[in-house]
Image 1 (cartoon, helix red, strand yellow):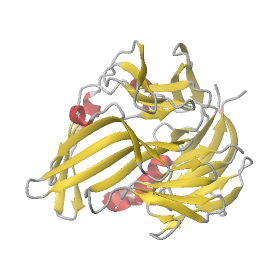
Image 2 (cartoon, helix red, strand yellow; image 1 turned 90 degrees about the vertical axis):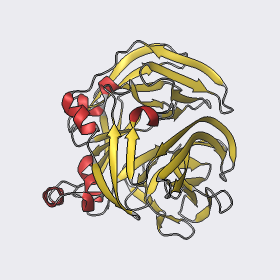
Image 3 (cartoon, one colour; image 1 turned 60 degrees about the horizontal axis):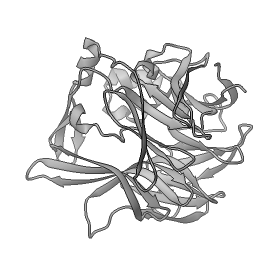
Length: 367
């Protein structure tokens, strides 16, 4: 199916400033809320593409945050998620501060981060991590959990957990040890949470919000072996500055990609699954995404390919919203690099300075 454009923002539009949009959500009135990680605010865009409000701003006071990660809707409030230190800032639809919470406390110590939160009535589902460092032992331990919390941050249930131990000065990212079943996860409209049951199989595990396993869906799918170049890129080393000096990052890469690389629920409970064979970089220009479509009853329906004439597989990104609506982020890779330009070489910085700016295109599947 060819995606149909509804509106677009950015590029040469002098009335709208975009930094790096990383997530979005559609409300019941058809407004799209765009989370801008770089500018630490949420743009509220009407169904016809008009920016009607800007929520949040950079800072540490009420209604303020830094490095916005994602956005969600909780009743008449909008929740803005700061990844690290992990906190949620609430505002009303006019941007007036409306509370929030910060994870962790002096009593339990550690550093808390939030990867993503999805709202479901009076509950929030999200990946929450707590890290603690022992510099004497050169060890950092991260305890991660896919958790259900209430709207004020209190734990209600833990659906799955995973612990990883790394060095501090030599950080080894071991793919086998780092992988967990909630490497990707999704929340359905009926309160079902989906995770990836196995790395090397097409297997999706569905749970209720109390943690009860409801079923495991399976389909045949062969692993995608990495090329020599992909393997070398995966194990490349980089050095970055940290508070204690210069740390080296190393990777222990596996020979094949994980079979499932993403999964999302549509508004009607349909499951959209992206396999390693259908990752964006493998589809070619003009193809924005390809999904295995699984009906709410668990049966495979079809493979859906979404096309977009402007889509550059090396530069652009597709963000899933609700199964009918999507965001196409044009020039996304260059926008990411521009955000971290200080870590790039002089030649790379010069190339980024001449790159096209980010452009957001709101699109839908034709009726």
